[in-house]
Amino acid sequence: MQVNIALKKIVDDSYDITIDTLPKLHFDKKVAIVTNSTISKLHLGYLLSKISAKELHVITLKDGEEYKNQESIDEILNSLFEHRFNRKSMLIAFGGGVIGDMTGYAASIYQRGIDFIQIPTTLLSQVDASVGGKTGMNNAFGKNLIGSFHQPKAVYIDPYFLTTLPKREFGAGFAEIVKMAVTFNEVFFKFLEGANLDDKEILVDVIKQAVQTKASVVAQDEKEHGLRAALNYGHTFGHVIENETAYKEFLHGEAVAIGMVMANELAVEVGLMNAEEASRVKVLLEKYALPVSYEIKDADAFYELFSLDKKSSDSSVTFILPRGIGDVVITDKIDASTVVSVLNRFGDR
Image: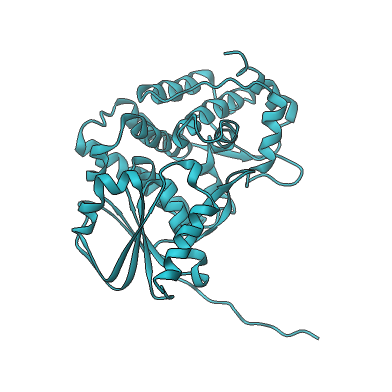
């Protein structure tokens, strides 16, 4: 005997991404702004001047990737319970990728899901982390291994916040822009090679192009069943680097930059990319003072950590490799010996 539960339905999770000065926002509901101590000091006053709500609270977390954990999630949830938030209430993620991911995850599980919006304050979060609905936290086994897909109701990208962004953080965001250009847009990559991002108009245009690229991919593959996995170019290697260094030596975008260099070397090894193309990517990353090398002390141990990557299956490791510049391959057909051989080149550098 079978009983069918008819749950077929169409859900429209579409939303707008506004790239402009933050407008005045009013919400006739309880709202909590989730931010960190650094952003609170720099920009909370500006945000509060733009927002009004039926009831408004601020949840301030510690700043840093090492705090992207269950303890911080509990801090958000406990505050919501204490202030009696309900399913009609809303969260605002106000910060970089760490805040955006944790706020979105907390919103996805609080009373089985409430709304949230993104107001990203770093270049990395503006062009990548705030778009697409990936939310989550880290644990002892790796980065973003616990999470959910929960789309925001809106994203507001205000270039004003970048005026206080340290150069190192800016470079970390640029790495994610390069990632999207290498995998999907050769014309955009060539533009970046000659672009001066100190020019505000050019910077806004670059943000727009990066967001459009990400949005197009997400629209085709919201939950990363295929195409969207290509946006993890550099991340398979980068996440292992972050794990090995306990998230304290490199910013996320810096680890991704090194990861792209490693992925490119593997791509050259298997004939997907030529050395000149790999060099162009490396030079563009170095233009913004991004690290492009990392000493792998034990290539076999490094390889074993790939098994924790969310794209990998039980028996094989999935790699996202560029096919030249502007195209990408997702493959689990590369022999471990080939990968380890490439990894060994990053020892004793």
